[in-house]
Image 1 (tube, rainbow, N blue to C red):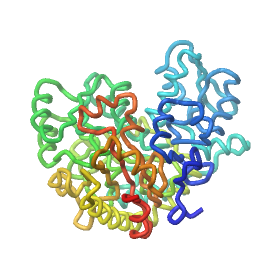
Image 2 (image 1 turned 90 degrees about the horizontal axis):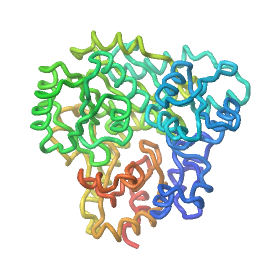
Image 3 (image 1 turned 180 degrees about the vertical axis):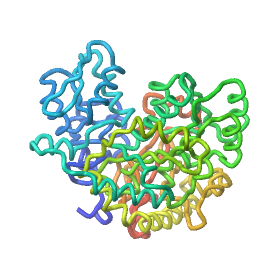
Length: 476
């Protein structure tokens, strides 16, 4: 099915994988009430799910691999012995690392199974559906050297660094985890700081696997707050998304970077929303953690990530050897091949995303039914402009709030004739009630940070723009 012209959006599509393939990383949640029921874990929703975002929903074929390892006991497979041991150590209790025919897993108890699942979710150190398929088929690991080298070469070109500065990961969150481990090794025992409202698992990762994290969510006062914090508390690193998700503002790194470097604090950047086509963070970031699942691949059917060591950073000589020492090559060859092929058209596709994203954001901004639109061109624009490449754009993630949002957000969301489910960066447009999906258990806290529970976020795809606008159906 061509999702550019035939999106998955109807009520009867509930639970269908998006795209319609075994490797899909999104699933259809076509109505607002479906999202709420999914978060409430209501059986009539969960029974319809074929799959979901792989860090949150363990795919049936991955579950089958787990059963081979653990039988009837709670178990998850992991891509290496080292990862399995990390998981078992985190869970504690009577967790047991097991190995069968080169496959590693962790068996735990019903009491700690939830914590094992959170390790899988937060660290992103998972096995992919393609790897699970190969295991179930009895296939040995393919020779990945050439495809991994090709992918590293392409990424090095995007980030203007050497291939040896690119460390491939099984997911974007695994890249963030690798960055966290590296900065903690450099300066053990120090907390981190999160600059700007964070993606949910980035904050959870620092809370659960760090030694404390200070959240500075208010971009208006962030420089003053960071100045006060850094003078009373040595930090291992600052983490930040450029721009943030879902409100798409950015901390002003031109002002923050001198302060961080004065105090020997590296900045770990997440550039997933903007991508290296649009922003250049080489003057600021020591490490860049990115998801290849999103715009670089664009297909919505593959997981992957990368950690970039910035050779122009003053922290490079300290951090790169640490990253190298801790690194394992865990990106499965068949996933790498999909990403490598897609990366060849990534810059051209991103320019199309930019153009349609800006067009749609401007249309929404002028529409009488819309209260507010968030987009990097307008949210803390000077901060984004300071890192935007001369040929770069503002991306294709757009967040909006309808007027009379408590009543109208569900109405507008339900009637949109576009794919609706988690994730972003796909070639087809994908929408979701972001706050409900990401922060359902902490909605009051999210709203205290200025993130409304009624937001609708759209990842704008490559459809014909006029057709896409009609499919939004802002007027009934």
